[in-house]
Amino acid sequence: MCQLLLRARGATLVNSGGNLSWEAGTVLITGFPAGMLACNCYVLAPHAGADAIIVDPGQRAMGPLRRILDDHRLTPAAVLLTHGHIDHMWSAQKVADTYGCPVYIHPEDRFMLTDPLKGFGRGFLGGVARSAVGAMFREPRQVADLDRDGDKIELGGITVAVDHTPGHTRGSVVFRVAGDGGGADSVALTGDTLFRQSVGRTDLPGGSGRDLLTSIVNKLLVLDDDTLVLPGHGERTTIGEERRTNPFLEGLTT
Image (cartoon, rainbow, N blue to C red; front, side):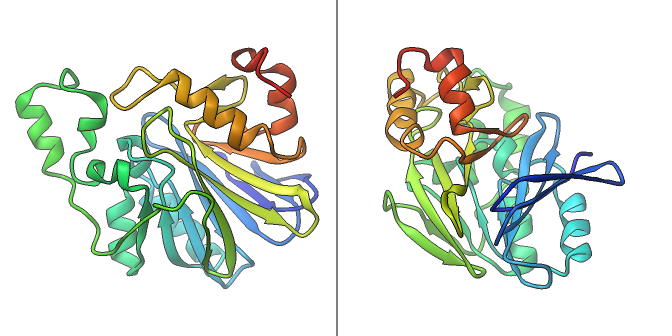
């Protein structure tokens, strides 16, 4: 398991006991890939011993998450979901209800909290298997809608900006955390909207290639080149790197 530790400023790479760490400013960010589809789950906190934000706790995330919370003496204040697909929300209800905190999700994707397979279309799994999987999920006790594009929410001592970025799903969002120095210290958690050298798929229900590219151009490519991108799958990157080298953005970059 690869664990990331970074602070939203700077970017000094540290390798400690096989874990990758970045030291960078005012926000501690720890992450690990969860489940069969290796969805990146992230933990944000202002410092050890503080409240924390959990982003996209996927399949089998609870074990690694507990260890991170215990190691850093963190208490979850909220679960944030970049979108409703099952690989990103699998453990959201369990995490939220265990620690007594709300789940934040865009209202367009909220239905997937109780019927996550609906986001993959009718042909995904048969009737019995589909019913069995559906029975595993229920809406968390506390759910908050991310229904205001560009809104800033204060959670666990961290200010998180929420950008609605439809395309991968209708309710996809990007979470941004600004560092002390502005753009050069900022972090964008992009879910399945933007990856290193790729972009999110748009062939599932609610997907739109035109909306995805519009979201990337209007919400992500306007950010500072040094903005660190932490995607829903795969390795970290920066806005500048994707502007220069992402083949899916050729001709769209500014």
